[in-house]
Length: 292
Image 1 (cartoon, rainbow, N blue to C red):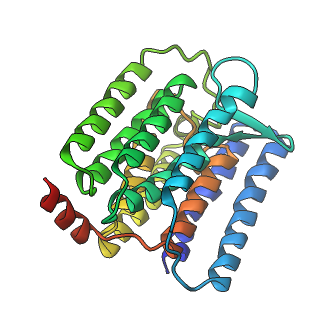
Image 2 (image 1 turned 90 degrees about the vertical axis):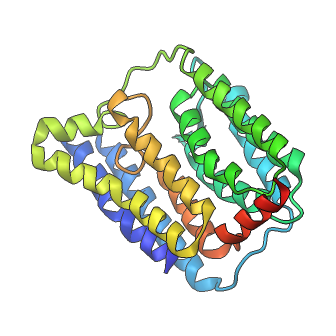
Image 3 (image 1 turned 180 degrees about the horizontal axis):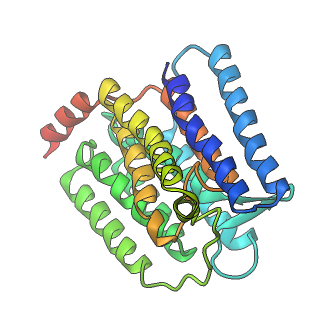
């Protein structure tokens, strides 16, 4: 029921995104793209849910982590010209790579760092590469969300204390430094400013938008508690941080604002949460306490 619950929780936000985009007079092709991505993604997830019932055990998580980290550097070399460097154009659609990759990275990173035979240098370097890519793009909001989400992962990981301190200190310093880099982009009302659109339309619309934004976070948090999954907990923190930063209008509002990438990122981690076997919190804490 994990994937179905996360899909249901995302439904109000995805519907509200279409309504808020219409209120903000977004172009019809953008509305069609938003709706198509949501519907096609949800259908694909449900089909995958029926086709594959067994758990997936990641036998080479470090290769996956480094591949995902490498994807975050692609916009720097092949993305749209200008600053910041965050998007790739694929088939006429601008893909915000970070929003697709980072939630899944967090989930898999927790799996790798909590395993008994965790490769400690690989876990730390992979996280540092993600932070570096977000710093140089620059993307301070996503970097801050990533760092806060990394806290529970590092806390219960199977890494030695030295590696934990090095990783945490590096991520925090990079996050603080990221906010001092200029971001020349102006916010778009139906992307970063959807809560303002809802507030200007009606108080009830703002309250509805806030509730819709909270539901995916609450679903992730509840599943993290029930399944004792630090990976899901960190993803919940990641999305909650982005929603908390929404009043600053420095990042697209996931699911609620326009953008295919946050939808794809949420759906991808929903699939992983159903099918990838991860160590639970209790085992992770026990392993961490034996090492520290």
